[in-house]
Length: 434
Image (cartoon, rainbow, N blue to C red):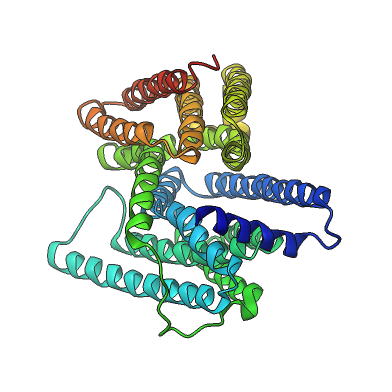
């Protein structure tokens, strides 16, 4: 049965991609699509980095810390989009491959409506709790959390529509949509900041960019939403739930490791959160530089034999380590100049923390790569280790938060332990190849 499904799927790909029936064209198109995704990732990362730079320079240190805390909360709230990217894409691709286009459209519409209902429900629950309990979290205001809930819901809707784009193999549309979101956020934010609307204006720009991009995705998909909402779709919910749960565990741990630290600084050291957000901006530079390796590794490792998988993972680890070491040297030698140029002299107090923080992010990048590769191989043990590492990090920061250095040390020790465990598991799995 599995063989038959694969046969139908690859037959479908050939019908879509091969106009002349030449198998070489299939490889050419595959490489072309991979390049498109990789290029779009680079462009999006550039726009994202410029967004963080512009907000760091045009907002006060305090407001920049609040903004970065909000973004980190959104990142944690939207961890489950990885399920949409992987599991929902698999289901939609199967439906499209088997010519059940109406079912694919119906499933997408149902998921979009479900997301809207859940977002509205989350808003109502939060507003009720806020009215009854007067919730406080550092310098965050209740309306900041409302923004987190709205943007998180829009993120899920976008992920659903992009999953349908993947199912139809319209990667160019997906790349354009992804770039559009980052571009709109940057342009609207910069314009509003120059008009001196400050933090409230940035959050308005954040919501606007997602709304416009979501609207654009519906236009791009056009008639792909055929199908009645009342149609019943046969999906193995148990299998989908099981695989989704394993995948989500790893993503929850990995995302939290580089998000929860700033959130806890906002809670324990609210006046230092802006400075820590400035540090995280340099960490993002390292993340953006190494992320493409994980992006390309994931699909390649799935279609490779064990020996090739070992070589791909080893090469990726070496490349990330080399890039991280080079960036560490640059940040260490030119810390004052980089902070003064990219941020402002107000952030110079964190120059002494930059080297240690860079090591923390570099070690994290290696763990992130190995865990991502193992998820592609359906090996989830180290995914649970990532979640455990996050719990240890939270406990550690709860006890050690007298200054930013203590927070970084806790994060570094936790992440280093996780990375060592990942490398041990890597050696265990590929023992024969080594």
